[in-house]
Structure formats: C-alpha cells, structure tokens
Length: 75
Image 1 (cartoon, rainbow, N blue to C red):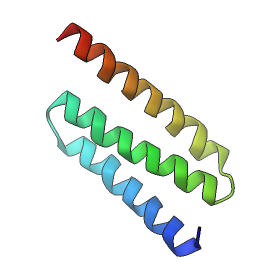
Image 2 (image 1 turned 135 degrees about the horizontal axis):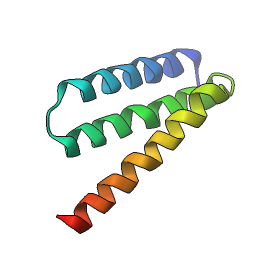
Image 3 (image 1 turned 180 degrees about the vertical axis):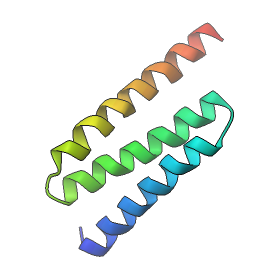
C-alpha cells in the first residue's frame, strides 16, 4: 500500500473517532467508533507495524462488536 493511501486511512480513522463523540445514539457511537478503530488497525499495520496503535484499537474493535451483539440479544 502506498504511503499516501496509508496516510488517508489514518486521517479517516481520526475523523471516525471524532464523529463517534458527536453522536448521541449508543449503537451509532459504537458502529462509528468501531470503523475508526478498524481504520487505525489497518493504518498501524501498513505504517510499521505500529503495535501501540494496533493492539488497543484492535481490542476496542472487539469490545464494540461484543457490545453490539450483546445489545441485539437484550433488545
């Protein structure tokens, strides 16, 4: 992957994370935040790998997925 595309993925990740703080609906927050974290994981792999970026964002992705699935079962 070219460095320019990697940079755009990193900026996209930042935009999604910031957008998740603007939303009010918890389900939408989790989805948008998960997309941002996933983009950061991709960015981390193609920029190094940058483990301090990959590990926490990967874990947050799994946490968001867990809560989205659990929320569907409760709702």
